Length: 200
Image (cartoon, rainbow, N blue to C red):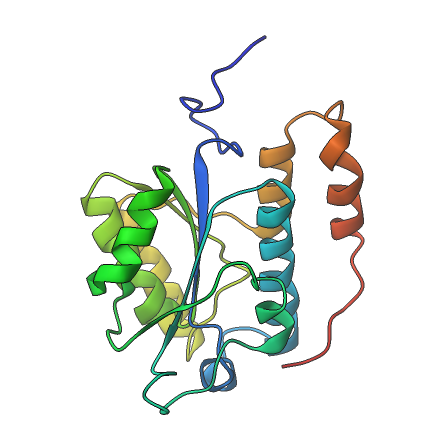
């Protein structure tokens, strides 16, 4: 059966973009909702999936230019070398004009959203994007909060507003969809069998 890859209700390489927000050392250090080493592995795997399928990636940091924060952790930054970060001062990336312009320039209405922390830098842009009619897919095993309660409450909040939580492995399967697509199938399998990356 032939399906329109742009109009498909599922995620496809043609209708989806990835937003990566604030994966910086200070933010990692405050995460307590999950193991930080596993969180790093999962966001790296998510970024690799996005690159494998050619998704537009919007990458943002906070307070690097001001000197108040460090840049994106190197394990992730090296994957995003072709996606230089949009540095902001606003906690809510959606309130930054350059970030918002970059999201709109992708032309995609389905947004895979990864951010630290869940309760602020994921939740706030998710709520704004949903209000503007975007579909938002938080990758729940590639985001983290300052507590389990904060992480859970933020996810519940955005889900009630219409967000659709995903995890990184099914995300790869949804974009792959058919193992006959041999140009990406082998790489998807290798990602699932991944080797651990270094700790942040």
